[in-house]
Length: 150
Picture 1 (tube, rainbow, N blue to C red):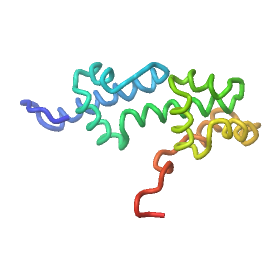
Picture 2 (cartoon, rainbow, N blue to C red):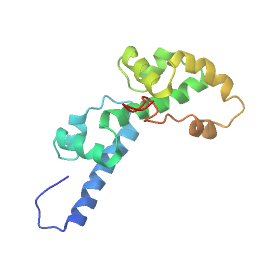
Picture 3 (cartoon, rainbow, N blue to C red):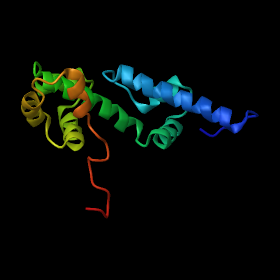
Picture 4 (tube, rainbow, N blue to C red):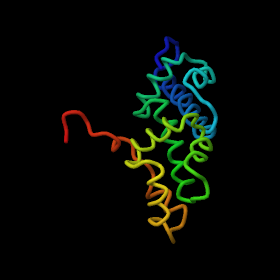
């Protein structure tokens, strides 16, 4: 976050990174809430465009992508437990559209949530929840091959 101040640049950069961390922490805590970039930016007193640029520069993904990754991680855990339907999981993690949720889930995980629910129950049977969460965590950048590469 570039600002003209009398402070040395390293001190300002640390302050800016702390603001970005606050945004990321808020997303981690409130992922079930209807969050948007404008509300998150308002919370740290910067513009939405500025927050978007700086967040992507610091964390390598957009605010929306980070939010969706958190929601999909939680959805994966709920689907592994198997007590809720895909629709119930969709709304439990803060998504308002089953179609958008299913599309993003498929992009990140590589299979639709209904298929994941069926396969995950068998694949993680007998494995402690803390271990299954770690080994089944969605990995961004595997969702789509880079252009020009196969």
